[in-house]
Image 1 (cartoon, rainbow, N blue to C red):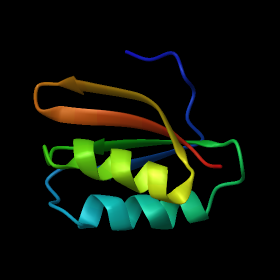
Image 2: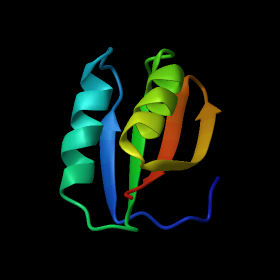
Image 3: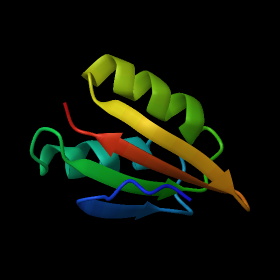
Length: 78
C-alpha cells in the first residue's frame, strides 16, 4: 500500500455517485492546506469522479490504488 500518512480517513464504501464526492468535499473542507484525506470507495465511477473533482477544485489526488473492488485515494487539500 502507500506510505503516505493521512490526517483523516473517510469510508465511502457502498455509496454510489454523487455521495463519495459530496462526502469527500465536506471532509476536505475540514482540513488545512497540505493535509491528506484517505478516502475509500467501492463505486467504480469514483475513479473518473475523483479525477475531475480534483481538477475542478485544485485539490490533488496524490495516489490511487484498487484492491478487491475497493478504491483508495489519498487526496491533498490545496
